Figure 1: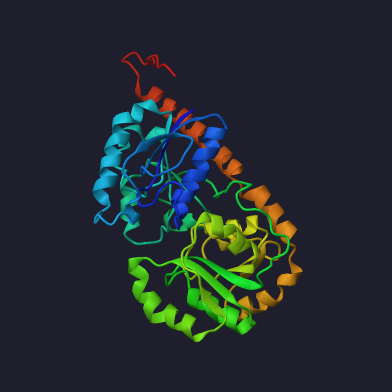
Figure 2: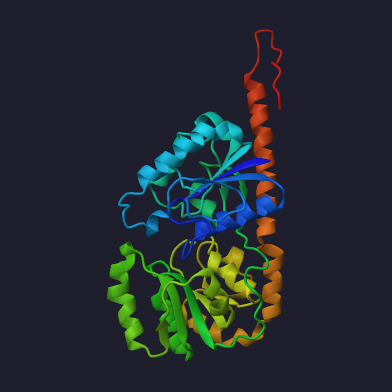
Amino acid sequence: MKIAQIAPLAESVPPKLYGGTERVVSYLTEELVRQGHDVTLFASGDSRTSAKLVRCTDMALRLNPAVKDQMPYTVMMLEEVRRRADEFDVLHFHIDYIHFPLVQDFRGRTVTTLHGRLDLPDLKPLFATFPGIPFVSISLDQRKALSCQVKWAGNVYHGIPEDLLPFHPTPEGGYLAFLGRISPEKRPDRAIDIATRAGLPLKIAAKIDATDREYWEGTVAPLVARHANVEFVGEIDERRKSDFLGNARALLFPIDWPEPFGLVSIEAMACGTPVIAFRSGSVPEIIDDGVTGFVVRHTDEAVEAVRRLPELDRRRVRSVFERRFTAERMARDYVTIYRGQRQDGVEAVRSRLVVGDGKPLQVAV
């Protein structure tokens, strides 16, 4: 199949540092190429891919100090997508909703993966305005806020390359890990409390966006300064992630929002590292309680879960990852959806192209 992948321009594909969506787009793109598909990636110019790259900016916009507004560049990318749309069997969008008006005339050949939260009130009228666009959720929980308004083409859990993060049968660090982004909904303050009460070191590897700077300076940084067991590592790249996650006793995922997926959870599982996660959003779908980690309701349960970590088998954690969360499985799921959308699009065209005597016109497929 000829497939277009349209990625956000904020980060490169894959990102050099933090960037969950762009990382997933990279894993999907590379696996589709490996499986023999003809893939074109619309992304920033510093992206690295075995697909055909359409360079829509010189570099990732977040890392370009000259860029003050990212929207003009996204609009210019969409014009290039519109111009070339007829070249592809399927166009797969990963850029939220800005493309909705653009694809109305060929929406039957599109798939849009919704990577973010959908429970915000402003989104309901938006999705109601575009009822025919096919969407893919990344967890079933993500759908709840819009389940009656959206045309769901499928649900596809994220996956990562099976050989990306090696298995660590015995962690050497003896610490708990927090990996991701410093923000109120990710609750690094909870992670500090859990580790301190459990009597273990905590390493925090996370980026700090400008919008979360106040939360860092007013809440998290003072906690880090007050607790000798806590180390702030900063933002780490892919090369350091394996050791960081693999040598941890567990990943703490103490979220306080309806997390649509949580890529870091399966990254930890790939290393054999169990996850202690708060029951919110997709967590019960991703974490097998008592197998790949523990799903908890509050801090007391999280502290108790730390004490129960010896009950878990890191080899079994890795085997669950291999069965459920590889990029190969993710790509297969998407190809099934692509083929379904392509067939639906052909049937829709056939149903519209009818002459006066009721006989369908010939349509080349």
